[in-house]
Length: 624
Image (cartoon, rainbow, N blue to C red; front, side, top):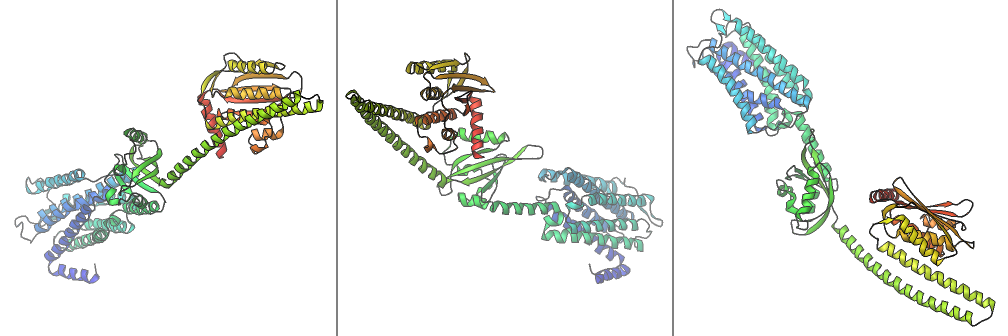
């Protein structure tokens, strides 16, 4: 609004007040309707109630101001009304505007302080708001035009009534209170819009004060009030109408503009994340996909939004698979797994998918976000690798059987030949050499048997069974004492000690006891087998009086060095025992016996739950 324009308007006011009044009021009416139009067209983007309530109210404020203009003294539209009617309409319009500012400010403050920015202005809520304003305005106009209940506001000759003056002060109070509430939510507005709105409210209050002491409706005080009203509505025009037409969301509500900036930032981050991202509502309807998802599936965002992820369904998974998936995420948990989907062109692809629920502030599920990584090539490579590994294992098993068969046959020939040589000679030195050949042959045959047991343990893991430990140990001792009658074996195992483990544990105990007997240096090897249950595990100890187990064998068995350090059968047997107990989820422990000998302890979980925990612990340890 230029200075020359104000000067021209002042001259018009001096020469023709009625024209001046009409120009000012028509301008304010157009601005009021403009505010309503901007608000109405931006209603789907506006969540904060302040702008919505105030914008809707200006439709009715502008309508009452139009009636006020037509009823003004000298217009001739209501020839018998005089100056009282336009003054009453003025009070009704200003009261509605002041109450709307206060109500909108209160609603906005409640929403801002409670952070309730999820209001959806649908046809029902807007219809209710418009109907409420229409009812109030209809009652006000009815009290003026129909039943004449509205108090007189102007008396010719004496001027304004006490009711009019008091009402103007009350209206000023409404605007002042509304300004305070708006100031408390300043951060939610665009800064420029807030300043213009605050200045407009201040000018409106000054305008209302100017209307409290005029006598002549064409007088100076009345003119001053209209100039102030013109300035007030001009500021509204600058802040809402002019700026709002260019960018209504930014002009009306800063939080919305901030949200849009955050949304753009999110989209940029999602596009550069390197992952395919999809967001749905609670029912599974797609709300957002990033460019990586478009590239992966072949569908544009416009083709996907509004549909469900079923458009990628390949038929590879049954209903139970999807039922389990939905049950997981609807329970508020994260689902993670692999899916075989189908691109737009019909090509199948494999993804690793993680789906997480999106929760509201009250903890309710509002939607889901799914992150996909395509692993089609990796799965194909794994399948090839698994196939090659399976083929290699089969070939190694065949080779092991052939070698074992050939070794046994050849060593039987060697052993038989050595025995034949020994029986045909009286030379004690030759007899000693043939005996060593026979013993070496027997050790090689024993190692071949252990190799077979190791291969079977590694390639064919057994199912768990329930074992009575005293019975297992009793069976082992019975077989070994029959084979080695010179050994003294003592058993200290509690009766009815039960554990759930793999059946190969029997072989592990056998290896420990036989190793202790075979490598004893005394004529009567002393071996003690004891067991105890403690802290959900069973400890099975084999104590002997044999020479100390070499450190290199302990290191190999503890997996501290390479297996090629096992140079003789004792190491092979202990390694087999160690692998067996590890397969059962346990550990092996070495200690020195007092005064000499070894204590080898197998620590085995007593049940399935304990073993699962032990295996998880071992896995974490290996990863660490």
